[in-house]
Amino acid sequence: MLPSPGQAHTRIRIPSLDQNSPQRCADGAIPEDISGIKFVFARAMWLRRIQSSFGLCVRVTGETAANLIGEDNKKLLRCAYSSTSICVDLPRKLTKQDRKPMVTSVNKLKREARMAKKQRQTAQEIPLKAPDNGLLVKELVPVAHEVYNSRTELFACVSRVAQSIPIYTCSLCGEVHIGHPPHRIRTCNAGALSYKEHSWNCGGMEHILPVIESFHLYDWVGRAVSHDEQLQVDRIPAIVELCVQAGVDIAEYPTRRRKFPVYNVAGRIIDYERRFPKDDLRGQGIDTYGFWGRKQPSRANLPDFEPDNIQGVALRGLEAWEKMCSGAARLVEKYSVQTCGYCSEVQVGPKGHRVRNCYAHKHQMRDGQHAWQEATVGDIVPPVYVWHVRDGHGGEALVNSLKRYYGMLPAVVELFAQAGAQIGEKYASVMREDVVVPDLDEERLAV
Image (cartoon, rainbow, N blue to C red):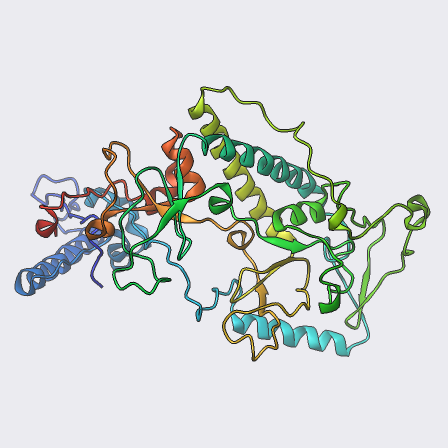
């Protein structure tokens, strides 16, 4: 497999094997690990011959050599390689015909379905653990509060930084670019023009932090929302609904907190707790829906920022982004979240809703119903990837002929990076900071 020009070449340095070398055994024989490196060196020379014969660019990576020599000689491999580069493929957009990758394989889902069917055939109680039994996971309640507070701080930081750094969005395909001037990379596939150039307009915070909504469930163990109830149930951000189900109490979105668990007997959920306990006054003052009378959120809890310290605001926003994503990942591991395999619809809860509003690929075969599957953090908080503009770029626009040398970042991270925040090693593989971007007259000489 040929590497992309953005991936750095790896050179091999073979240790010296003279008579005085400490790497030889007492009898003068070469150890097995050194012979393994010699085998890798021979393979590299063979690939070098192919390169010189056919003009190809061939690379031997550290992972390839590790597979050849074995797991026991990884430390020796690190000494043998003079430089290593971790480069991954840039994230790509799914087409309308593609389905989202499955979190759990189809074979495993079939196996679990067969086991669940056998359990339902025997009239026995199926033990349920929190949160499947309607109770909260106590150790995740502080995590839910941290995620909710981090989201509030993140939106405040993005709103403040966006006043200093321009945000552009394409009016045809919706692609986003951070900073001025917008790039000239021809990746627009929504217009009828053959040269695929973008039509840039000024964007806002909603383009880099899109809000994915979900139906708010008063009782997440109960039945799913039907098609006729779609206008009677609140729709709130999915990350907020996840925090509410995990233990955050919001006055505008009441939810049922059980004191006793539910039971699963032969596939049926049995709730021995009363519908409204005595301390709830039989549901007086509880409105499970009513988005038309919703109050505006209070701005009293928003953080205060220094007016001129944009870099400090960016650092706080980047920290809030990392806390929100890491906390949401912990919540998704315990609390079930469903997403449509073809559209962006998300439902927080053990099962998806039955509203027939899917207009994605082959929706006619499903009668408008969604193709529910297990969701990830990227479905709840989608990272909008944009082209990364490096420091010291000179204010020049990114050009189409050099796009294979550019990296990408989530739009929020790119916004904070241009404001002066230091990006960690988490995004080093997609930033491609170790790849030198040549000039236009040098691009034809790059290997």
